[in-house]
Length: 414
Figure 1 (spheres, rainbow, N blue to C red):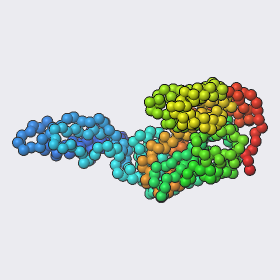
Figure 2 (tube, one colour):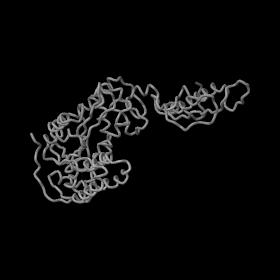
Figure 3 (spheres, rainbow, N blue to C red):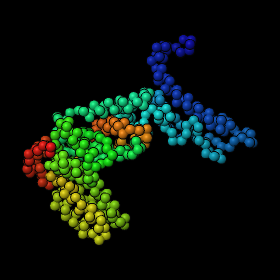
Figure 4 (tube, rainbow, N blue to C red):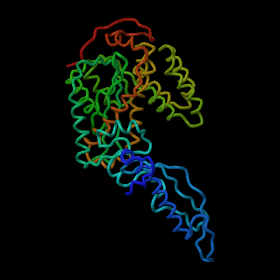
């Protein structure tokens, strides 16, 4: 290249320093020109050219569509698809089909790429597991991808938990929609609240279902790694977790998720009465005292016993576990009423199960989902009033949210 072509006062060194920006800036222009050329070939005439031939193809240009992101192996670019009107058949670009947001090469490299995932979470959650950083994809073999996430997960499972002071634990299971092996796998997840208010992921284990045996294995593993007993477990209505806790930790308080209960109650009420009944039952979890909560329950029962007897039965079922929350400080009630901390984390995971068919082994999916939960852990909301947590961990019990007594910190059953 002749130096005079670079322009006056421009050094070749500056050109080299900005080569990446120069190339990346011209790629969208090149693809945009290809899209325009495709329309030109379809219409048989260039832009602004008049229709001359009698038998020329019908149709005309109608501007451009909204800007859209397209992810390539070298990064993401923004393009606009030309719009064509008045054709006998709808014009569909062969270069950039409808609803495509990434190339086939990007899709085959990363099993969890999703148009709805945030850039920051994608970088942190997927980089270590599948070899990607930002929108730039590092090519790795499938074996290498699984090996990286699997090694990190295996190391995490061996970490000692002796120093953790866990006050309460949320438990729930996630059935992965990934056609793993020959059946769906249940991923059993435990998230704990520490005495400083932080929430951490304690366990992510796979099992065939949420029965007593798989939950028992998870709890025994935590004991083996040195985790001390906690004060309260929050879970849904699955009997497996409660049966396992009865053996492994019989002295801990048990709180059932109010969200799951309300959904089950409303499901048993005829649609004609659901709007009114919803207002009644949604006041139950927010009663100021246990006695007030029971009065609201009885009022609901009298009002709907004839209209929806099954709903009334569901309200009363396992009532003791629903009002356990009143044994803890009022400042913590909003955290202990439901399993939302686990459900919100599962929402992040469910967004990525669309590509889960790429996983053929339960272990691979478990390691990846563990990685995503580690990312979600960074944004967990801390518990309110953390100064009260050490007293709760030491055994202080409350009545209607007010501090009353202290009990000895007993170890779990052998």
